[in-house]
Length: 415
Image 1: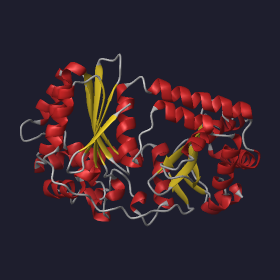
Image 2: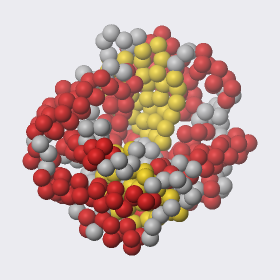
Image 3: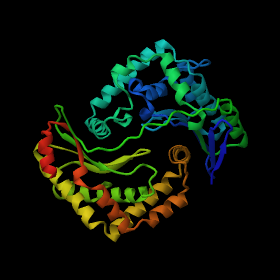
Image 4: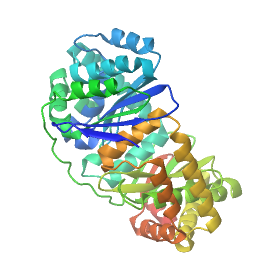
């Protein structure tokens, strides 16, 4: 069980004692990501994530790094389209130091102009790295196509043209308007003392109450996109409209994905790789947002086999939608998912993430028993109904990167 405290300014602090561990995981979750940015701000949330490690009013970047290493834990951050998280995992004896470091970075980062210039170069290299990864590029181009016209279409890392205009002051201004108490969740899990919770309350209660502007809604629209690149393999991502992340059917969707494209016993793996030998890797995944989502199937293969493989994938998907799953498939997927839940929660960081992500994005934190019960409640009919709703090829999308064909050719193959 966890405890929840809402400070007068709106900051929510969630804590959970995990018996039998000596570690503590602390996360500061902020409800701002790339979809909260205006077009001219594209990449700001991710840029700020980098800049908090570049020094504070009290510590240089080198001192931050030295103190992080001195406590022998892990301190890091990440940015998604929906949120930003700064987190640390340390021995319980080092939790006060971890809290001090994270809060110094969160509240007192310098945003020095020279550091901004230096880190801009790092982020441009990061963009180049993703451009060189065709799997990531295929997924990024897919999102840009199906969510076109909305902030969800823009990359988390931003674009060189928008990053070039950012300064320390513009990044500070973004923090002032988007890092609002009502959109902040502090999550602490593992081994900790009451004094550690009081410390967090004292540090966050001084923020002035505010709430950031709501995001503009986004919706999936089918689209095909191709990108020519001199690669040995073509990288294909086939997608369909799917569920927002808080949808009650998300547990059925997870089991659907397990049966269809997760693991070596999945239908896509068995048909496309094992029986036909058309690819090395193939898998499915869901990407949910607050108001929309997509379900995708990814594979990489030679140009000479992609038509046969894509036709085989389409046949497997159509058969899945019409026939549903067997009881044996459902039982196997259910046990895999339940095991992942239980094994994952042996980590204090997993507990912390469940607290922070659940409270911030879904306004609901489910414990392991509730999650397992939700998986147990899914029936074969639930999965078939969901598959019939999702796998409509009139709403299919495709992103292809490599020695690609024309959009019309891909449409014909899928038809």
